[in-house]
Length: 116
Length: 112
Picture 1 (cartoon, helix red, strand yellow):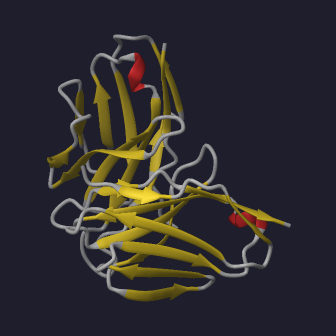
Picture 2: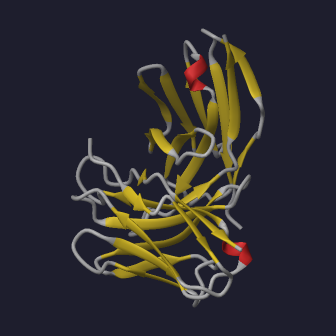
């Protein structure tokens, strides 16, 4: 069964450093998302991406964050200068956007980001 | 602020019983609702989705939606210890991006 994959599973970085989290969405999906979950808290939407551009972003997704689809398979989240409060689990998700199951989002296993 | 509210639990049921999980939402523009299961330290796993008022059944799971009351529920019949997890309710407005707004989740424990 197709699944969303994410790398790395765990990333440790120092405050102020740049990190890139990588995702490979399900191959026929058209919509891509990043969410984050701080330990013990709810899953929060960061950004949605369609047709090579951001379709919506939350107030969390400030100028320190960016997303890119550098090729036909990868979808990346970059944090330019990490802060301690960026420590969280980051989930990538994708959905078909059409057909019989347009809205259902399938999540990857996540990348645990630890900022020290 | 558009919120999805869930009782955090824990909800404890014996094996074989029916577990009932509830969710309310404040955004009347929400059109579709999703139930995810999340084991500790893992990612959300989609269980069910519902777009229309009424009931939707899939195996041991039944989702119920009442848009007038802004209420969504998930029933798990014949609960198994492997169903023990946090259940997340999420709503989406639809439109071009379908971003999900999640509740905090309800921790379900099924006792053997």
